[in-house]
Image (tube, rainbow over all chains, first blue to last red; front, top):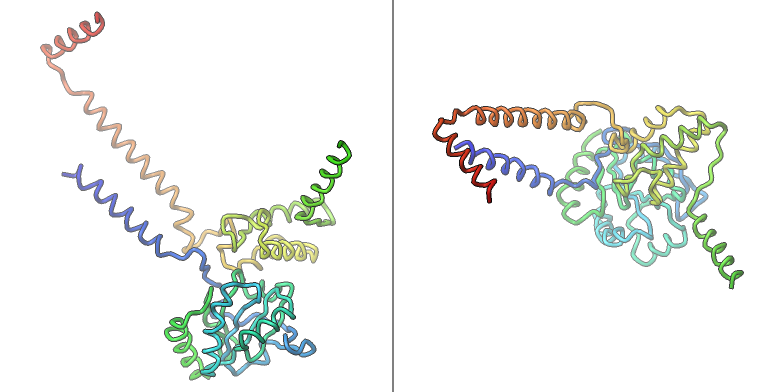
Length: 176
Length: 152
């Protein structure tokens, strides 16, 4: 009897592991920055390079930090979702224009619409490294205390907005 | 014709050289630390390559980061910590032993043990099978069959 049950058990164990493996997302690396203070920066604004923005300027506000670039194909599919999201005015949206040419970035915003309250430039990718950015687009949610509470890797979909971002932002807005 | 091929080869060498980064180090130890670190850090875009192997832009940025930190006199531990603070243990090809990475480290040993136990059980069963007594009558039959086989 064991002779028949043992291979079956082995098969079931293998099948369970393979099924779990199919549903894993090895491209999504959990960020160690969750629940840590947002990494500091002081970066020139895309639309006004003489002015600078740093996370300290956003204290007391809930904000989204969206990493984007005009060369990034998935950002194009994400863009209408962000435009829609911006209309709800649930939170401030800060864009990190990552390793991009300012002219190309400005052209992109003129053509596709600008969902960002402000975009800052990171031409050499150093702010990206501090934030642990490895794949554009990425979106962080930062609370009123300047602590990162959530990170989304890859394009944000309308479902993500409804099911994850809006509830989380509502919760963070209620916090002090 | 000879000149043409030389010109062609020279032109080609320029293309090959374009992908190479030139780094100057203060001493051989620093260079060794750089080579060691870049071959122990994972490129997060192309996950099965180290940042030394990868041509991805992020890998180039991380190499620059490692180089600059070494120039600032940072130790290897400092740099590894800098990377794990931002990208997590996954960035290290040689992750530290913790609860989360325990299965990764112990897994192979566990599988080896399972294998050894299986081999042991299997071998013992074989040995038992070999000990089965064969009656004199049967042995006679075996012998005659073997002899028959030799003749043909």
